Amino acid sequence: MRKIRKAILFGAGIGVVCLALFPAAASAQEETRLAKKIFIQGNAMGQSTQLGRQFSFNVTINEISTAADQKALLEAFKAKGNEGLVNAISKMKGKGRISITGTLGYDVNYIRVFRQPDGTTKIRLVTDRPITFGEAWGDTRSSDYNLSGMEIVVTPDKKASGILLPACKFKMDKNNQIEIEAYQNPWKLVNVRRR
Image (cartoon, rainbow, N blue to C red; front, side):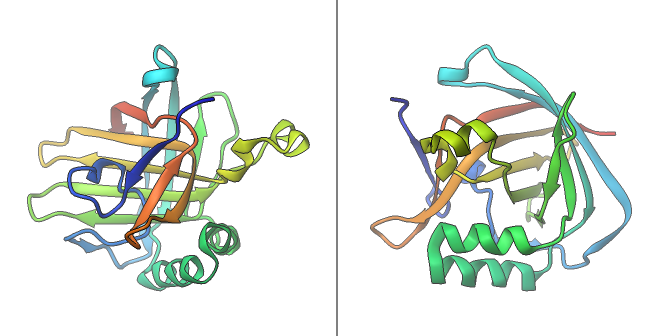
């Protein structure tokens, strides 16, 4: 059985996995429609049990989610937990797309941009992931992890890195903190660049 890794959203020192819905110490961008689409590409490298595996990805950002979207997701999570969050995200219209090279990809329904005081920009994406036929038919444990998340961090000198959680779910821990539980280990994003 694979060991489940947990990453606390508001915990100190684990900000790199902070993918979600909740504002950081900086302000989020409020305009929704972008004047020009943002195209990001890079490679995802496996860690721990996925070590040695890698794939290329492409992200297209058409618009940014609003504070109202964020509030709706928080309320859905507080009311019904991860299931409520998945239902609320699945009802939102797509703000962009993510695809692995060679696939059609799928819509990303929640995208926020956070500008940090030090000039760093964080782009956070959360969406419902497609459950494969085999997962649904076999009612596998992975089908409980029905969200995907990504965080891309761009430093002031334009260097970018990040983390990808292809299958994850959100839950409350015993201290009433929101945490992300990944099905497997996070994937490290490298060679991330705008096209």
